[in-house]
Image (tube, rainbow, N blue to C red; front, top):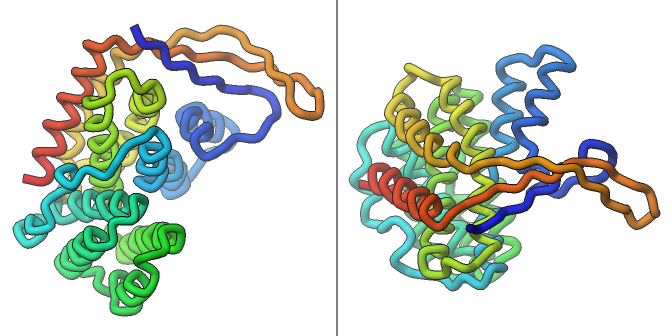
Length: 291
């Protein structure tokens, strides 16, 4: 039995990005209770609490992962995606693969995946975002990992903003879903080879909360082009993650200035059998997306 511990402080304190994601559901619910949120504000809250590929890949690297050339989607597949759903989802997939190559300083692969997102950008009609200026910035900084991460993140935020301006939020949600699935796929591949790595097992278990947010995002565009099939797959995955049981207990923590923070500890129990079930379902969904 593997036990995953998350600490949620309910009074005072500062949260890191990862901790904010852990309490994503509670934050959205609390905000809705305080005042009614517009649909746009609710969706922005959901998107904010879904971890970016950069966060997940960076954690992979810290956990001791190495770059595996067979994990990312084949760059040659980019020419084959003809439907809106496939193009949007694989824009997210290749965006995560671009981040994966960037974080591990793989310059040749970075160029490959940049080419993929550029091709899909043209197919999706967002060539204004993945333009020559962006390509030049990336080529000029391809040896600088930190600069590359900033450029990639900025570009995908610009893509999200552009799609929303064009009234194509459903496409933006597909990109988010594709990036999330690919990031999770990279994580589960690492755990398959390193089943005792507690850090990545924890990261995967925490996606229980991120998935709730992602399902909420996709549901908000239900019946719009390309999203229903994705929603069905995510709901199936959610059934697996929902098997992870939560146990709460009280907790006290003393800050550097000596003040006391009172909160609760949530324990997530994940058996090897359940972890394998998660891995299998993630692999199935990912295969559906990239095929």
